Image (cartoon, rainbow, N blue to C red; front, side, top):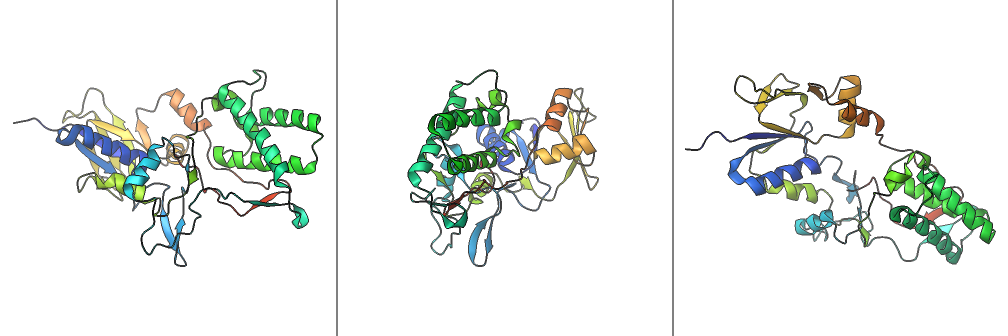
Length: 322
């Protein structure tokens, strides 16, 4: 007879938690006792496909940014999310960005697309320089680097306010992609490490929720437990009475013991616990380096107007999709 299975409790049923549970189940099979606990009443985290006025609507994540080699795209394909159901009413444009966008300035002035293409090329070239690491070491932020690059272009080409506004439009989009209020707060050296998948930027006619649902479908019945809010995770390296080093406390007073815990909660939950003591807490406390990182990292942004230019029509992402 075999011994007791090692128990792994995964906290959070967003994509990270579901992917961890799926991988453990796939690799370990019946060797491990795996549980995924979720404070909410649904899986998927910030992915949620809903309906509004008879149409399909993504409440959270909307786009897959680059499909070539993207694991999310592959999961979406296997889940059948790339093609709508027979009677699905897809709200989002499903073929990526339009090839004939119309850009208007104040007063309804149509902007020459050749001018916009030129500015877009300048912005793209500057982004390529960031990715390749070919930047000035004396420039600290992404915002400063982009503005410095545009000022050089403007001096050489005597760019007018329209080009200035068009460049600001790209900057506003970049703030949306990177989820920062100000590009001057985005570290240039760190941004060099970021890589995008190539290919189309697409939405999912079948609904983004099919992705977490597909991951969850591989787990045995009963693995995922909803409405189980964890208030504290304790680590006792010498083991507790039953030999388990992990003790998990739920907000209803229930206690669960495990051999391992994988924490996949959101940054907001971590901030609430670490900074305010009202969310998920750890005993012993997390290392100082992790606490400092949780305090520093921000999320959310205030999207401001992109000067005088508005693009119409076109798809826009609601949030960044991993």
